[in-house]
Length: 582
Image (cartoon, rainbow, N blue to C red):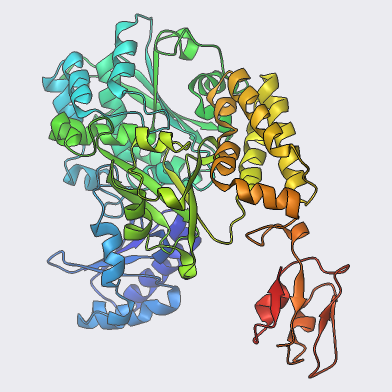
């Protein structure tokens, strides 16, 4: 038997390492014929730690939320007696989370050992690279990518084949292919999971891309906050060298290609390719004017191509299965699949991969299970700080580059932050603008100063100090920041503000004119009151950290509004629904 414990960052954070150690300990103590293995995140992050048990015929039984104290039941029942522990097995409903998806990028997620190249080879790993280098010309590889319709999955959605071809046609002493693994969007973890769970798919995709344009060196620019991803990437590259998949004379040809990792400092602006190149060269990560584009003068002024992790991870599948097979999925202009990270107020948070063109409703409710605690769906933020809010009335919008852009948001790299009725849209805009303001490199006046002025207005509004004309001033400043900024960070920074004004203008007006927060979220605009339902149990007064609640036992209590810090401890502790928020 084999026991495989999911050990992506999400699994480790919930105790997977301790669970794996407990399995190893008990298997050894009880002298059982079973091995404990490692895999990455399968995507159902909300069920971690996940343990897969394979019998001698390779039949799978999946256990979820397995903590060290649960291990003995599985060891004694399943491993020792062949009797699965039914109450810990994944439910049929949760199985649908995976079964409703179409997986290309995540094809090996949670099934192979990312630290063992033999597992990747067993699922036809590196056969696509061998096919491309041994039996296809660079032009044929680019043509296959063109047929597939693959567009960059980093946010802009630019045709991948066009960028590869541009780099191929430009001459230089050296050519470089770079992977942007600097995943900086709040709530996004798609690239991290691929790096941790299937690093060889990225490596193979970069080998193929490098061959198509004549690059001999690849660089993975990975954020330093992803230590596990970097560790597994380094191990994967070393194993690939030992197998002859990296280095000189790949697959018996005269093509040479090797790779290295550059750990970045995690600046969001380095998602812009010229800022990334500047960082690679040891400079401060600041964008440069284009043209010239990196395909002509990029890293060290040589022809350079940059794509993100998800884009490269698609490439081996496309070359192995043919561009048409990929192009048959999705829509006419948005082909293939797209990986999304579901986060926020959603029941089933994790990774999903679906064909482009699927309605948002099918992703959020059909796969993600809907809203936590069955509250009302309000909006979904797409594209991170560079994107915008898609409101509930547009839930049937197809997930394509064109349709999402029409809403004012963008597909982006794939983050989906789901919001319910208790989310204040003004405060949400403030949060994202605060992020982009901090991440601005400061090169452009409008981005550096304009985002700060917009943030100051939003902070005033959420503090109950908004005034007439603030909404119009925000819209005016947003236009100037978009028009006056050189790179994508500044050009898209106002999007969360503009989309929330567009779809939730009433919330801005309530904050400004009525001094009320509709979602009852902004602390300066809400008050906690104890009603006559109070039984005088005194529990709320005991939980209050500032002593703002007073009253006699069995008598109605009151809240001193001058002392109240609106922490919510009282309403959480009350068993009689006697406390209201207004």
